Amino acid sequence: MAFAAFLPPKGARIAVGISGGVDSSVAAYLLKSQGYEVFGIFMKNWEESFSTGYCTAAEDLEDARDVCETLGIELHTVNFVQQYHERVFELFLAEYRAGRTPNPDVLCNREIKFAELADYAAQFGADYLATGHYAQRFQDGGEAALFKGIDGNKDQSYFLHQITPQQLARAIFPLGGMEKSAVRAIAQANDLITFDKKDSTGICFIGERPFREFLRQYLPAQPGKMRDSSGKVIGEHIGLMYYTMGQRQGLGIGGVAGASEEPWYVLDKDLKNNELIVGQGEHEGLYHRRLRAGQLSWLNAPPEEGKVYAAKTRYRQPDQACRIIFEGDQLIADFVEPQRAVTPGQYLVLYDGAHCLGGGVIEERMEAGK
Image (tube, rainbow, N blue to C red; front, side, top):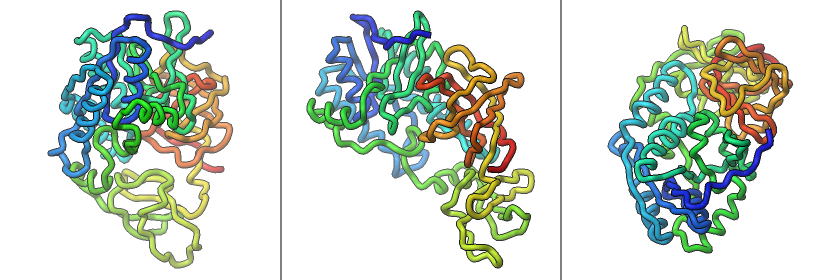
């Protein structure tokens, strides 16, 4: 394919998802300064009454209003609390019940931002929806393609890989060709109140909070035995949902007779017996050569069997070389090097260079060992 950078046609009306952060603020500024007809939409996806003290929606809305007033653009507000709860949060909880570790940010993009929000924007005549994601949209004829953002520390194509081709066709990412430092400089130079605002972290729209405490409000903890890889009971876990593959902190393992001083890591979860399996050091059980992924979603043509692709099994992971084999509606990823802490419920995302092809949910780890 011969990809070219995408520019909206002159006169396009563009909605910007304004979150109250610096990235969406600068996205709106850039589009306005390029002569497009721009308006903002602030969406609320979480009720603070669900769990108090951590959500910053009220403060974010004030910042969004200030930014839009500075830019001279209209701001709409919309409530998607019910949609978020039904289409993102319920699945988030179901995955934890099943002993997996989900990534709600990926679902939020597909189910809320580029679905509900884009449809809402269209009611006000928007031709496109722009966001502050660090990713790039390119074009090959009539087909849109998703590429990594040039800022390797901020690239967010991983979180966007599950949106549909139709959603990508009406999406714009003004920051994809910029470094974060340049974005903050633009915000400061143009008197945007968000120029030095801290980046948001934590669960999409829920905020940063003590995670175990948060989960405990929705799912009953089921303590059980903690065993080492030989089967020896060395302690108790507080509930499998609170642990993820490769986790080191918070295991609560004291001195174990006959064990070395090496740190302990989560190797596996025995869901049937409600047991947590742990091992010391760079245990071979931390590594797997293959994985199975399902719920596949491709932004362009599916990848080819036998070709070497770059893959990520978690956000911020350096690209990992692999080949794939399709098995019905699933695929097997065969890695050149064993992968550490592959986690069911997370996403396998495939790249051809900087081109994000799509991916799927990690269902199973295979062939343990270094």
